[in-house]
Length: 494
View 1 (cartoon, one colour):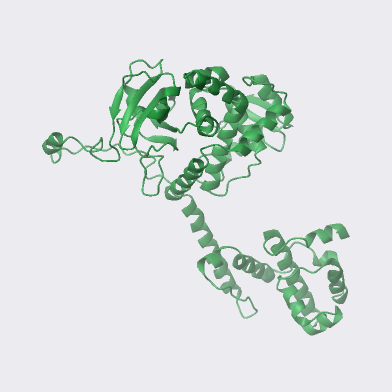
View 2 (view 1 turned 135 degrees about the vertical axis):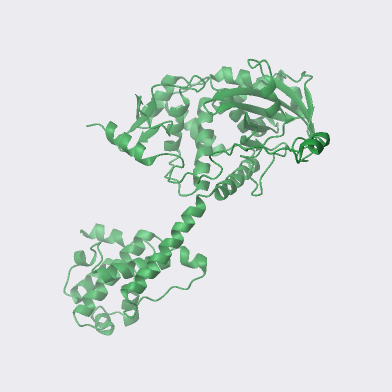
């Protein structure tokens, strides 16, 4: 090892796991060599002109010596700096001690309020293995806890609160989109498929369309070979540019493998936001919406058509810009035909149903809100408009049905009554009244039916398969890593 490389070893601090590992291994090697030479701490300290306590600190891995001191230690022990800096532990016992020390310096012991044990010769190997096994089990339980539905829903509720606090507008992501568009020469208007390909090339990636993409993925990025794999068959309802831009968005944002559901959900929101900001550039989208507002004819269908995106993408983008750039508070929902809320956002006073953890997703929408009544509409080719009177005020909504393999979904955007004047469709006479979360609104059966049937029926529930299933685990929840890695191996350039 040259002196530059050796110097680099000692720049890490005790807070850095790699630095701790190097310091611990180095300390144990020095101790074993000192004992093998028959030297005491005092004798080694005298040889390098340091107090015995300083030598002890180095041997315990709590201090990293500078290269000059390391050379003095090597000379005193009749060895070389290269030998002292070897990565492997000096013995099996030392490896066990190092593992226990690393465990005790990690986050688990302090979180549990457990004082670290000073590892000494008096501890048998079995004792150290037991401490290490207990630590590993606590870590495993923590990972399991992080993969429970409760943890995921709590993380989702916190994320929605952050989005609401920022009016769902993220200037830093808008700036990233502007930089990438400028880099490929975008001068305004819709973003073409060719321009999306140029973005990939600009970032050092090529696009490859394959027929065997892993079933649990929309795309797979091979960072090793600079490739993005996409399906040859595109869904008729999905924009072919979207999966490409989503893959590029994760690269631009520098996303690493998520370590928790909070991390995973944040990355997903950032990716979707940046994708929409690229496909509907802020300056162009705001210009379009401002003109529409001036003429009092804001329409999500027009926004969708102007930028050739899906209705859902247009709806998402509108929630980004409505409050921050147009001064219009807004709410958004995506609801499955069963009534289950899949996505939701609001900053206009709408109160979505929540569970005990504060999460909206997974709860049931009010049967009288636009997001549910739209499923009964006979004309599914035209937008559905509706006013809904609620204890918090009157809201106007526009909704569309979109199809997916899991069934039909409604995508709904709404605003308070005082802002409906800016929208096309405000003249609708369709009106409903909701008193949710009052259970008598749509949760409880009418009293005459309840009196007749409450004790005379026994329905066999169709239990959803996901009700008792564990939440998908892994770095990318729901993705089959074995399938993905096998796919990449099969497609790697030879």
